[in-house]
Image 1: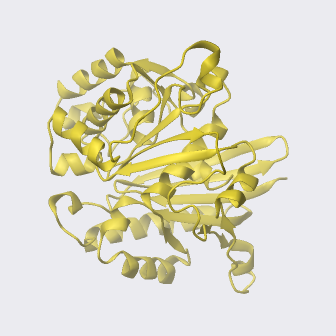
Image 2: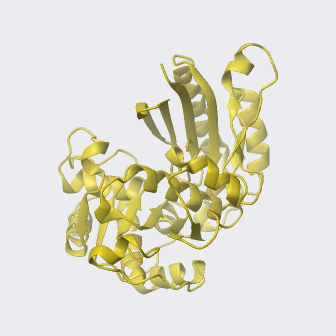
Image 3: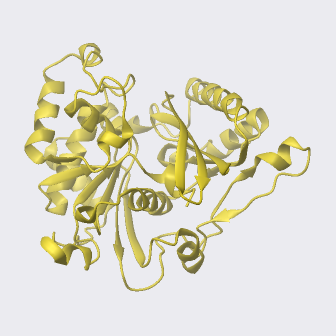
Length: 351
């Protein structure tokens, strides 16, 4: 038997859990769970506090996950918070409530750290040489991250020089001992040793624009592009290299989408009646295919979108906005297609 670990994140729209068994021959995912909790509800309209209802929904999901985790021999658990918790005035009070109610240590990570972990998750999950040196795009409900690998210097980005993200030692807690914390992916050189497969410096930028944010406060196509350009500080993205050159030059590979927007897009494109992450891994979609899915969604009322194979309940109203961000990002990055990957920061934190 390998080492069991759990990872959770509280995103602006959803709360997720994975349980992974790490073995010498590779990792095996035993369980994936997603609950639509919308902790960031209302933040896009200028509110600065998490609502009581949003916090209660999220606490209920975490309580459910705690029960699920108890059924596995999990040795370490991570719980991360992203954009909504970065913004809200009462996020620290919520973290204290999470600790009191569930025992989980909630770590609120920066946008750069989120991007870094998403890159690790995607890059370690992609084995196809055609997907070497990707530009990784993570469209969330509250923020959108872009990252790629540069081969000069240690693997680090943004706040990766901070203490890292602590995991709760479940075995120690269950034995009544003080829970131990182990930093993962701390300073650049430590991150490089921990991740092995990733050699180089990860460039990462984050823009505070996401699918739920746009649902609550819409922007037109040009407005979305400008929001990305502003949030990403106009950073220059490498041109796409073709053929053998792509694997040799950082960031010149394909655009790879991770997170719920990308995976739901792929599932709808494949008419997926049962979610199959392996079928999505590396699936490439052209700009016209993305536009076709967006046009289909726009032709249907929100409630009718739920009948589409591949649509996850709770994403039917935000997905069109996520796809508009994707199309704007493809324009910004000068890429005419996107490849789908089911691995993101939840897998990155386990590396």
